[in-house]
Image 1 (cartoon, one colour):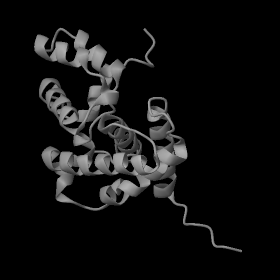
Image 2 (cartoon, rainbow, N blue to C red):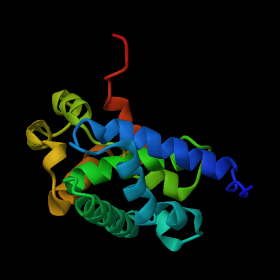
Image 3 (cartoon, one colour):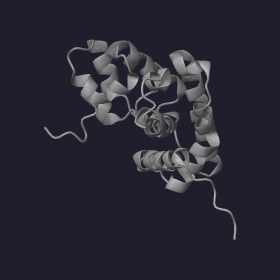
Image 4 (tube, rainbow, N blue to C red):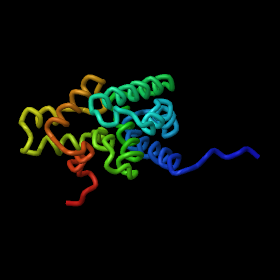
Length: 184
């Protein structure tokens, strides 16, 4: 009988994160089954990269370079599987994956937890666009964004405006503007 693969808490989180990321982005990626999206996430290297102790874990600009590498890999892997996805859609997969494996998983006060991009979607952007505490130019910009079509440059511009405007201690806290599941 074959030996089963090692199954520990890291593997458990990884599998859950792939499922959650796939479900979060699947509807907007035609042909993107959980298995296809999961394979693309697994092959981009994020799992192993995040488990390493690395200087980029505390530097937002350096994290952004790693993030872009993962997203580009996901787009390329999906293209090879004949599934079309934008950089923005790949970023959503990475954001949900990291939310599950780092932010919520109890990696607590780590620097990496504070700089990880939150999942970007229409609900978050529209809610922020209505908040009068932000500059009108930012509100107008966020209101016009379609996250599913963003290329790398557009996505990074958006991340820059969100970081600057929000000024939060931890970037994941931006999700307080996501009110899709909050009863009013």
